[in-house]
Length: 192
Image 1 (cartoon, rainbow, N blue to C red):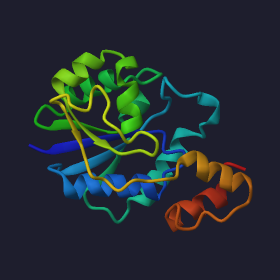
Image 2: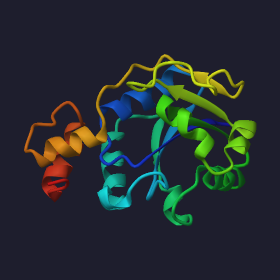
Image 3: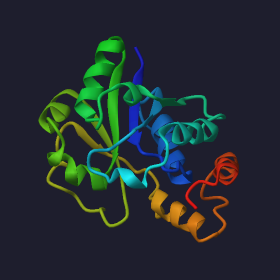
């Protein structure tokens, strides 16, 4: 039985912060592996800022080539849009009955969790590992919940929005994203 952490995201684009969080969860918690679940459309985000899901997936795959216990997942590509986490979890549980799944989310998402579809079922049936986010440091009403563990993951102060804006302004994004992802963004002229 594998203990799998699910790190959902638009990964628009994936950046070093995502990779540090995934690596921390895969190596400093009880998880056996972490799946980066590329979300075609998050119901709480505007869709027009998203580039093609296959380009986002390709950048994830380029970024994790050297990571033995981190992999990408396209599970939501074949599910109805927009994707609701509870539906994806139910599907994964049926498809991989011998594995246990743990949610990985930022402290900002923990605050909005009560807005999620069937969030009570998520709290009842799944463990959630929370990583800190800037401006969302303090305890929330949910942080004491028995299904939730707040981790000591290093705090990341930049975002995919920062990267997209930097590319748009012609700024250097070296070290913010892996070299392979930087080359892919440049070769396809993404975010210009």
